[in-house]
Length: 524
Ligand code: ADP
Ligand code: GLC
Image (cartoon, rainbow, N blue to C red):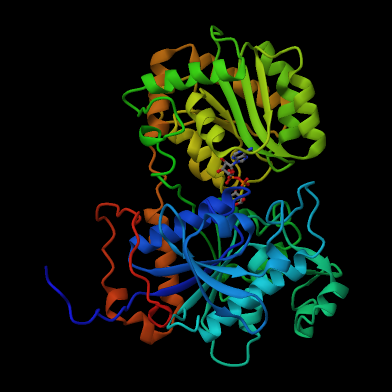
């Protein structure tokens, strides 16, 4: 075995990636998926990207190889660990008073927002800004900071207002509807800079908006699909921030999220009774039979099995799905719904299932494995949205051979091609779309899909087209890398390893599923 006397210098591009969710350490929705898979894809392309996440109980419990780097001047302890599956290095801000609580990242166990969320995420943003400007105290300092969603909007502001050298920042909008708005008095009491508390700062209709801070102060902006990037410049989709977004339109780009093709792979998914792929669908039939049995649905029903796995919110049109249920069941489809969210909708869905158990299964809650099993079992996936920044659920459904029934907005418009049911052989459609956000339009679309379901050859063709779509991260990860390259200082741009990235078109690299050494000399 060759023994190298010294490790070669590490010229990789160093990115601090700030997020409030990262699967499997913390997840309430697609943010957790995207913020796990993008960094893994960037590591595979040769970047040294390190997420930083609040030290929630779930994150501290799930991260492996944790070690303490030291206290941060503003409060809290900085830890460095790894994710258990992709072995990404991840910084954790361990601040028990703020983050070690029962419940979710943003809410208590009764689903009420934590009353000190501004303090929690301002503290997290300040800690990340400190790490960005001073390094981790163990030899690592980022060339660039990439922040995500309102929880890290103040990070971009703190960097921009920092008096001294600082790395450039990028801010990704995953959802404009969650803005992190809080009373100005609270911001003042926390000592946030006065510059933030004015309309040209982060003030928003008499409050402080953490999302506005990210949009106003980051050097570069992205969002998670090209269509959403255009939509949010309009009053209809701009959630009150379209004016500011139009002012920054030259700095905004839409890059479609990918999916983790290893985690969401029906050919190797341990949550399923049997593996399958586009050419061998016996495992999908087994998944349907098993799920029907487990949920108490009629095993002999002939119509399509329609599943819905989603947050029960206005965004996801859960109210319209509820209203459409009687019409759907009248068409002879079976429906299996798994979700949580609005308590009124949760109760209404539970009530709707009473007396219809063989045709309608409702499971309120949040179970990762059940989400996988539902996609595998499904013929159709209901994923309509009033607006949708990207919509990972729809991509997962297609990969699992469940054809989506959805609306052509945001990322859904970029990922689903409507099947021309009059000439199914003529197009490579991958799902069914409808325009009006109404129960009648939704039910009409499911009827159109049900007609195609009765034509097994056409159905199989559409299923193959959907399963054959490449939703992997590689192309998009390269686009992020190119943007990073534009932003960083010239001396970083010319570092040898950064220039030696594999050219586009090479076989897709795999995210490392084993630890690579991380530079931590002083702590060893
Ligand atoms: P959003 O982030 O707006 O919720 P996405 O479709 O991008 O929408 O991502 C949703 C993610 O959350 C997917 O991984 C989906 O499987 C998951 N998910 C949503 N609801 C549930 C649930 N009740 N149980 C398990 N997973 C869920
Ligand atoms: C948000 C959006 C969703 C997107 C996800 C990941 O939660 O609602 O559309 O897929 O973020 O970017």
